[in-house]
Image 1 (tube, rainbow, N blue to C red):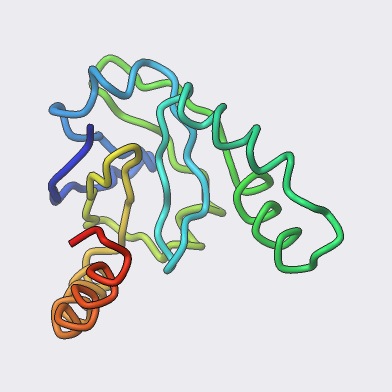
Image 2 (cartoon, rainbow, N blue to C red; image 1 turned 120 degrees about the horizontal axis):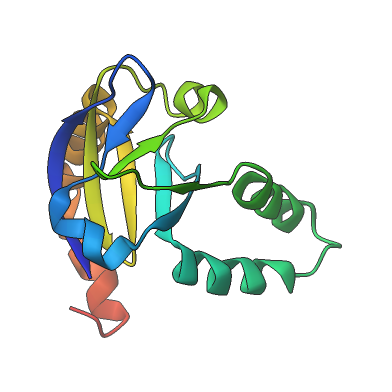
Length: 144
């Protein structure tokens, strides 16, 4: 399980070292894709394969579904972690998430998210200011 947030840097060769705490659970091969809210999602290979199979069964007749499947699948790249636990981020993914040198890697149960550090701070502040409403919605779902 992935939890927590970690500040990391992208090196001049476009490599990002993933937190050492997560490397064992990530394995050697991961998938990086466009995420929601202008971040990147990083999945262990096995988790990605399960998600991709589900996405492949969604109805093609709905434009919103097609768009989401394209966003996730066409935007994905499979990469291997090097000996230092780094992944190479393609330019199109760095541009999508507006990543520069300083990023935040957040653990979200079955995936990691990679955020532009400033955008993460903005997103987090907005989410924290609405935490009462979020808690109420979770309560209605019986989760909290």
